[in-house]
Image (cartoon, rainbow, N blue to C red; front, side, top):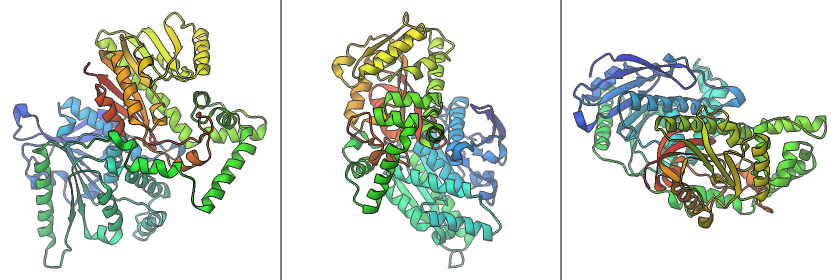
Length: 553
């Protein structure tokens, strides 16, 4: 491999320069396509330059990319305590989008090597975006699962003069916990390289993650200690040789991800769901939930948002409309303070960010439809009041030929039609009652739709059969080449509060839900005849919004 690469850059979605080095393959494979290896690192992670590692690996028919965000001007969002790790994962996905377009590289022809905290970024990226990469290699991943481990990490850094700001350590803790919750859905062949320092500091955490990793092919390299009959340069060569062998082996064979269709019947998210569905066993937790419920109903109702949630369900269309409006109100000064606090809740902040991402991807789909010389004929089978859809189309530059919205609740349909009249859209828009899970209702949809959206809906229902029925109905209503925007809830640290305290729109029930990993929802969408195009995730890793294209009848 050449010792120096080509210094390149691209502009992120938010107009930041991202710098990387590109090392072209010296012996390209021609029509077979060039495999690519991404080194995601900090300069301090390697004793040698990345080019030295490439030389050691000796993979002359592979392209290499070296990315270090320290050389870019990206600004990681810090508002509301956002996860910098999740935000960097978002930028890494943009880098993937860039190199696949710029160098005609397929995602399935990419392997990633990462180190330390950068490895946690890649783990978060693989959790959030479910990429079908060829393999991943983690060198000393810095996972932290318990508060005492986070405190110890911070203390050791201070003693060594490498002070870690508390938010950074807290971010490692938060990100590691949510990554571990979805490790079962991981499918890429994965190799862990564990050093003596890892064994001393956090081997138990790494072994825990390794044991719960869903990949059918995984490998753990426990590097021997230097000075015990194995000089450092020897085990370094052994390590590089095993990394090379792992890369070559998995570039020579295609990895098939296991099906997650039956996740509503068995598996990690179903176990989590069942635990929340059953009565709380711990007496102290029962007292805690009871106290929360009492405060919510006797003090919280002074807040207009909380009162609406108590009356209609915190997951209802009416409640979501209030969250989107984001204007604190209440019975008195205390009520307004409570409402402001309620609306600033991180879950609702992420919900509003989900709305922005839906708007962004609807606009992108409309632009692509214009390039394909197709009119925008929009469909939403579970629109709530429909305000978020109408707000989104106001920001679309392309003309809208027709809008069809449906909802199961008659009150939502009436409110939606009132909104259409207010906006003067009754000549191109129709809002009618319909069940998004009913085959009989779905077959009555027109078959000329070119753009569909399902936002904040499927995540309320556990059964994948229902979701697939709905997706198939949408696919039947769409022209080939049309686009689908869909969302899912990747996780929420307050799932127990929701399931024990917050009422649902389903009368007499709490807001109980089963998480879907990105891979699970992607598999359902693919089964219905769509191909994933791009995706957005908020900087807390709670909600994803994805754009897919219909590719078959």
